[in-house]
Length: 115
Length: 113
Image (cartoon, rainbow over all chains, first blue to last red):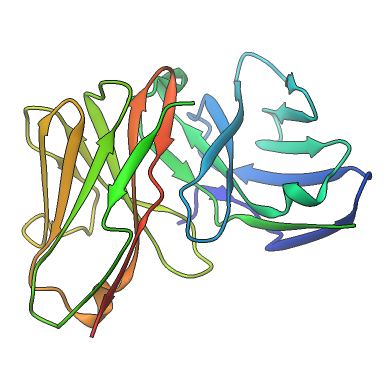
């Protein structure tokens, strides 16, 4: 049973435009959410996170939005750059995301930013 | 950010042999490390949680006798795939918990012939 779902396996956008990556979750106990970026044959790299007490967190070109009632979060990248092309994983955690707590990952979305 | 290394990055072995993968946190101490495996086009599946100085906690469906985990120090955890079979071929990734998040290693590609 997939508790964290990324229903779009891929997304293609034009350089300079906005990329919106979506993630849904089923476990209402999750209270901390993270986005990771992964290049082929490399480990994931942490991008941005959000606690369930917030509905938005912004870091440079990356903004994560959380809609708890809908159990939905999204990652916005503005403006998109070709170097952003990678697989993006959404992850969720319990217990306010202390680093020692396990993460549940979605299947990832392959983002391609075209020059 | 913090650096986590894995060794080897790639290994090919014969069926029935054992393979050890090392995960090291290079610039911080990690009391907890995690081991994941990833099949093509699938999410990272948590296999086990490795706690320094104690037994690992395995996720449901993961055979602890097949995937031996040792976390002998605050900077090193090892995963040994015992009597590897072709179905164990996968991408194995470790992460080290620290500094408020998990930092991932670069992964190890295991191919069992």
